Every structure is written in C-alpha cells, then in structure tokens.
Amino acid sequence: MKPIFRRRCLGCHSATEARAGLNLETYAGVMKGADAGDIAIPGRPGSSALYKAVAHEGDGIPRMPLNQAKIPDTEIAVIQEWIQKGVLENATSIPKGPTISNLDFKPSDLNRPPVRRSCRKVSRSSAFRSPPVRTR
Image (tube, rainbow, N blue to C red; front, side):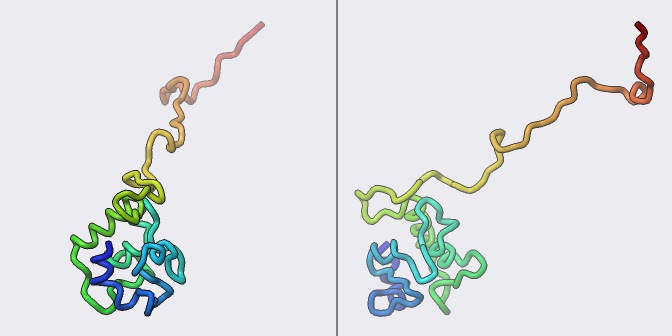
C-alpha cells in the first residue's frame, strides 16, 4: 500500500498536509481516518470511503486523486484486496475485521418470509356452494 499511497496520495494526505484530516503516510493515520470518519472498513471495500474515492464510485464521495485522472485499475484492485483482507499493517498482521467475501445482504431461505400453503384446494365450482347442513 505504501508505494501506491506515496505515488498517488501523499501530496495532499501526509503528516505535513493532511487535507480533510487524512494522513495516509502511516498505518496509524489510515486507521485514524479523516475528519468525516473511517476511510477503510476491514472486510468491506464497497463500504469504504477510500475504495469508493479511488474507484470513482458512490455519491457524495470526492473522486481521488482530486482533479486528476483515475488511478490504474490494477492499483485500485490492490486497495480493494487490502481492505477485503482486513486492512493489514504488514504481512504478519492479524485482520482488523471480518474477511469474508461479502457482508452485504443476500436473499436466502433463512431470510425469506414463509410460504403460505393452503390446506386443501378448492375448485371454482365448489367455492360457491353452501356447506352441507348437519342435523342431529
């Protein structure tokens, strides 16, 4: 991550010039986030402001690098994978959050409402008949 941040981000997001309160020069700076909050949500690149900014996705997220062309897809994929794997500080770090492939909602049998089944089928002709009268 450091080479990408050094090449693409540190001109505006370093210890000397932390625009929006974001310092990408150190791991602690990344984990601190920006003035607006967290920038990398471990295991969830699609919900992370850092990924959305460099991938040019999401409404209300500034496209980074600011006023420059989008960074190459290969570098965006590295950032996405880093976040997906848990925002590791180095190769021997423990993930900071879940690292499953996707935490977003997916329909399944466990979260669908039960299907109502009728006890017996009623034909159209019998639906309009009166019920039988029982005598004692």
